Length: 519
Picture (cartoon, rainbow, N blue to C red):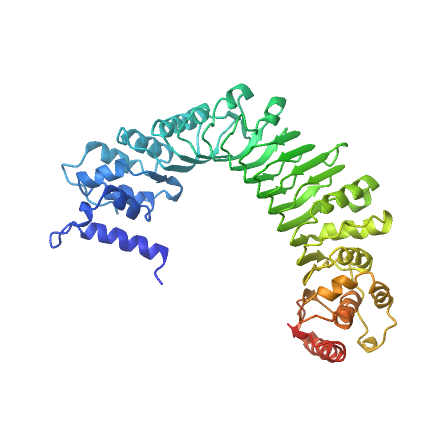
């Protein structure tokens, strides 16, 4: 199969060969759109080289709609540049000599473009001043740019480029700043622009003392917005998102956030990671999305209140919290229960390690039961799987009455020794953990009657692992397959693992007809 690099070299060679004295130049006769499509496969430096071939190819370069400057590497020399004929356009020499000049080259390319040639997308990464950034974006807007993807580093804070706000052609805008970040203009200016924007991604925003911007993302400001991504927002305390056609919302690293309110009649995907202020009381999250299909909630501080409403279309949910377990209050525990209850329509649920720890503590302290996940088919749990986790797992199993696939990923914490199982007790039933599981057999009967596939990663001969395996093999009447992937161990333990495998196989034959796969 031809690699991408080989394809680029082949295309470039075919273009150059079409100008050889022995061949007929048929490529140049192709329509502009076709040639632009061919050039799209090449790095922009190679596209610039083709402009020295003829007036026809110079025109193609000056009208090329897809400008991706992120592929430029500063060359050690320009000796590999195709030889330019004496009659070549004078400005062309200037353009090619500036190809190593970063922003200078981008400026030159934009200034040489044909007057009515539109830009489909412009991408660049640069370290430059705010005035130079404004100049580049104004040049792109002048050529009716549809997609802008900019990553910029500056020596100081800078203001959001206003020329992008007033653009009627802009459909996609991505602005990522490295430290220290940028400020947004007043809401009166922001709300008068972006009338045709479909996608907006902003990273490293400074929003201190700008409370009016917290209510910016509504229909009145972004009537056509379908995708919104906000990262590293400093000073963002309250965020209200209510865009009528919004389909995807991503929020990440907003550590000072206290209140999140999301309402989206067409919202299908919500991802919130590493957000919320852990030192402030009264924090709250509210989500209302009748079409929401996927939610990722990872490494977030637990809010004091959680209200997830109307998530009746939910297919997939991933939940993980960041919290010091000793600081958990009854209010926080209820908030976790309320949050998970709002996900009760999900078909697939993944709970990260801290979530399982919280539910284990919740089960012990508060005695609050989860709302049944009646549509849940696939349940994945990440856990250290120690003794205190077992009641929490039982609570989750009770709340998953129709689940047919259980995936358990046991994380290995080298600082905590899990109790090893005495292999001589395999055939006995006097383990405290076994007795607990047996006491739960009636409460989780529906879970056991639907469970068909079990996959345990990081399995070892610890008491918790073995007790659960024996229990599921004994009571999983419709169990079809159990996959046990042992934790990484030294080669000298191979004989010990083979003995465990043999004992599991023997126990399964006496209990059920499930296929056992041991790795």
